[in-house]
Amino acid sequence: MKTKKIILTSMITLLIAFSCKEEELELLDPNVIVPETFFQNSGELQSAVNGAYSFLQSQGMYGRIGFFLLDNLSQENLGTDALQGGLKAFMEYTYDPSLGEFFTYWQSAYRGINSCNFVLEAAESGFIQNVSEEEINQRLGEVRFLRALYYFNLTNLWGDIPRPTATAASETGGVPKSSQSEVYDLIFEDLTFAIANLQDKGNTPLGRATRGAAQALKGKAHLFRGQYAEAVDVLEDIAGYTIQGVDPVDNGNIAGEFNAESIFEVNYSQEIGGDQWNATGNGVRETTFRGIEYSPLNFANIIVRPSFLAEFEDDDPRYDAYFYSAGSPFGGTTYAPGSELPINGPVAFGDPLADGSLPLVFTLASPAWRKYQNLDTRLSDGFEFSGINFRVLRYADVLLMLAEAENELGNQAAAIGYLNQVRDRVGLPNYGTAEMDSRGYPVGSQQQVFEAIVHERAVELAGEQHRYYDLKRWGLAPQVIEGFQTGKHEFLPIPQNEIDGNPDMTNADQNPGY
Image 1 (cartoon, rainbow, N blue to C red):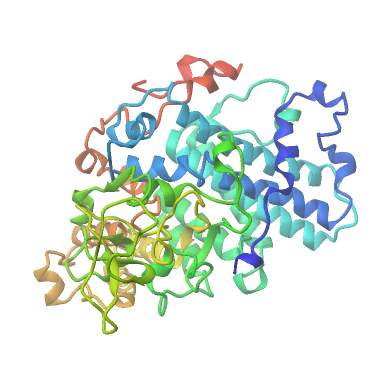
Image 2 (cartoon, rainbow, N blue to C red; image 1 turned 45 degrees about the vertical axis):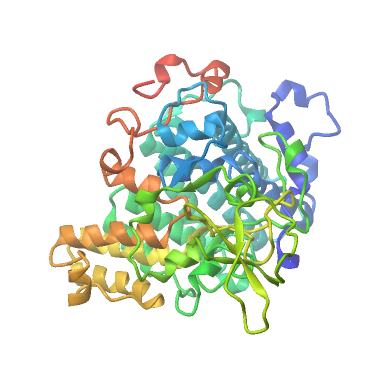
């Protein structure tokens, strides 16, 4: 369904220009949008909103740094010799404020926030003309969802952070840090508006924020703040999604995009593409590095960490859905003996098929990620890059959040029920049965149910950038993550470039331990 995706890059160059100061805008640079005259119809409003989405696609976020950052910090990954130093520092916890990858992520997220603020300021100033109030509120719902998402990630990575609610063009100086509580206040305010003004999934074009997306993110925010009753109230109200009938492999490939459990995805399209190599850190392209970076037949920068693989039960179908291992077929093609293969990497032929041909199979020393890879359908993730969408919110996550919130409220039976919905999808024994007790997952107490939730979130949401946040908020990071230091690594160091360039911040604002 790539042709139905929204095209997000149309406004990006112009919106980047809004990092300049107000006096520079007075020069009337023709490459800078003047909000007083720009918003004259629905198309121009939509184009500006598209710009707010587009920074999610940038190399600073889901294009490259975002997935490396969260996957490596969680230590789901293990780096190979090919992994560059900055990315390896994430998983080894050897980073400091000077690490350029931190600033690339930080800058991308704040440029996304700036794009959201640009649209919101135009609406507050009455500059949007010839557009119905209903449509304006729908678009404002989208950008307020997006601003909440940008801030959610920033505050969970860095804690207390600057919280601009105006564009850089309208700021008179720098922006001081706000407390994490103040950041969450804005997140909840934005998502409350979004829920009231966005449409349901069936009434929203693919790739745009829906009411369900805003509800899921708000429920997650309540959960992260320990507001369990509020989380249940929001998450229980989400309708129109199901995990039943969705093959787990389809939560990480092109064929399964926008499936029945998908709530919000960051769009990519190989057909639209773009030259990743010439993009700056914040350059937006319609493809992502994930395929080529993680591919065992291309860069092979990482493998799956063995200790993380041990989380999976021996008969869990999600193991084969999420990972390639020795004997996994790929390419969707069979080859005659002696065929010359147009790929690099360790491969071998499998057992003969009925027609005498031999399927190509991996020969791998260690399992590699299948999720977000294209090797099911082609022989290489090569220099074509990947157009697979990132699943940011999906319904299995909602069910597991409900399980956690109900367990914290003392409702263990309800929590076990939600856990078993996730188990039923893949045909695994239910919690609360003798079979699961024998596997080491009894659920006779609140603590045991919590341990089941920890396990189920690990295996269900593997490779989807959730585990680092989970381990930190549960207080399990020091036990699970090698090199994690209590009192230091709860938050990342604020990028030194931000402290040096923001007149309202000094080194005294740096996070503890750095």
